[in-house]
Amino acid sequence: MKKVLKVIKKILVGCMGLVFLLTASIFIYHKYQLNQESELIESKGTWIDFNSNHMNVYSEGSGEDTYVFMSGAGIAAPMYEMKGLYSKFSTENKIAVIERAGYGYSDVFQDKREIDTILEQSREALIQSGHKPPYILVPHSLSGIEAIYWAQTYPDEIKGIIALDIGLPQEYVDYRISLADSLTIRGMNVLTKMGFQRLFPSATYDPEVIKQSFLTEQEKEIYKAISYKQAFNDDMEQEILQSYDNAKKSVELPLPHDTPILFLSAYTDQNKDSKFTKQNNKNYLEFAEQLARSEVIRMKGKHSIYLYAPDEIYNLATHFINE
Image 1 (cartoon, helix red, strand yellow):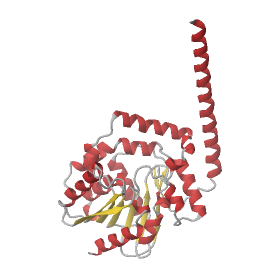
Image 2: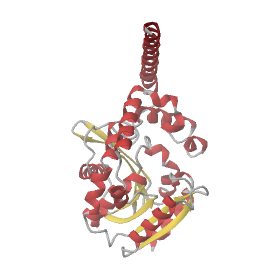
Image 3: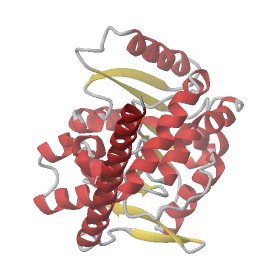
């Protein structure tokens, strides 16, 4: 029996040693690659200073309206990932891509990512980068909380919202993150600090961006480099962990009744009849019915709908705002 235990102990020690060696190798390789890729990552946009941390706003185009693009959680390089959509708008309008703390060329602020902090940083960054309200917000996914809260707290600053398959604040309150999900999120944050995202490229950045042609070959390499660098950092982790508290602050306020909102609800052939998709569409309709001017349109495409229907989104948004 003692011999068996000794053998088991040796096996466990050996396995632990291999895991340590593998982790150390991945970490060293990650740091080496970050150093190599740093030559690709040169800031493009306007850097706004927040107590020695910098937040990036990318701008282009000219016109009467300013469309503000706000990425969903975990989209590490918004300026590149959303280019296929915002380049449609910038032909006749001003556009601004807000890269929140921890995203794109912005620094990781390591603050608590409380909704008022996020919103004030967005407002200040837009003003300092030369964009004055009112704005037309174009949020995706998690940034729907900020967009709606913005319209609730500063209604005069928002001309309208083009909501790209957003999560409604009430949904984040109703479906609060569980303990298991919280541990998973924290675990992902730790793994990306060690560089494990390099083993799973398709989970680090969206392969659809690489397949399409709206980025040059060099921009695709920059997109990958930023994604590997920023993957699920502390700010992204906190944004998700704070989603319940942030959404609750919005839910406790009156709805932005006078803000026109176009809800674009994404679906695929595989999930169009699912319970989740039907409930999500119902939630949009119920929210929209309480607004003075709103519309809900279902669009075929995955959650990152801006990659699958940019022309349709541009046409629908332009028509909605012009009305």
